[in-house]
Image (cartoon, rainbow, N blue to C red; front, side, top):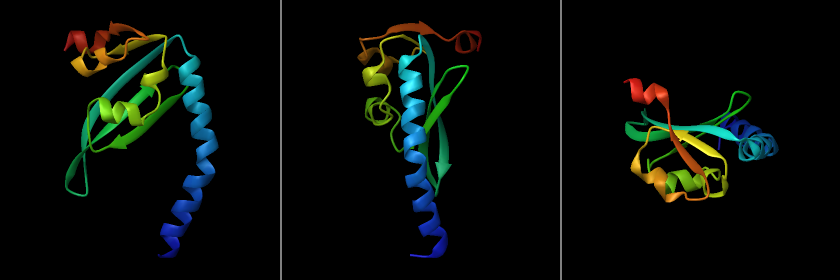
Length: 108
């Protein structure tokens, strides 16, 4: 592999502890906003999944939009606070949290 790819892998490994801390902060939050939006990556639709609080945001890209991708983010399966989102049906699978509708989506 080339130098740029090697640097990217090394940087990614260095970021892992930081990302785990971000996930932990989100899991400890009382209210978290969840959203997903489609985007094109290498001519394929991928989904950018976001979990955010006023202090931190975690994002990951996945080829799927639903539960499989949400599980891969490693937040919703363990979250027990208030999950604010657009009311999309797959969120209902997560029963350990309380679901509320995002007003921004309601106003659209």
